[in-house]
Length: 125
Picture 1 (cartoon, rainbow, N blue to C red):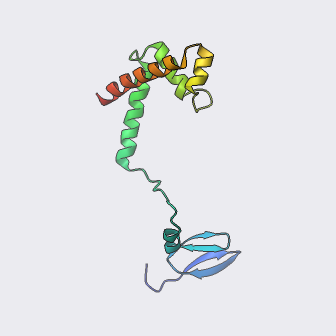
Picture 2: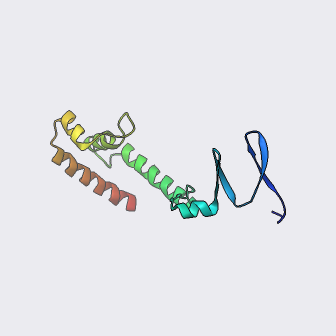
Picture 3: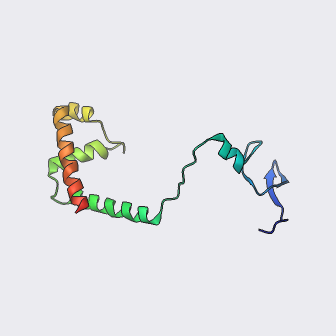
């Protein structure tokens, strides 16, 4: 951008000249980059790297494969689906699953750890 080029933003229907350091406009408050730094707010980078995206996709594909094959028993699949993929999309707690299934919560926790061990072994292999 040329050094003398003016930048404008529209405020209440009028164009207002602004400095190129201005990055956001909230209601009537103009926030500069320096102001954001000084505020101490943490603004995460929402851009995921290509490598992370590919790795996540491969892991999801492997997980779907595991759930569709006989690597896990039907009971193990049912437990994982209930705890992590139930109808509300959030999964249910071990305590709630124990109440519904009649299986002690400690047994559910033990089985979940065994399943994760199997999954970890398969996904790393």
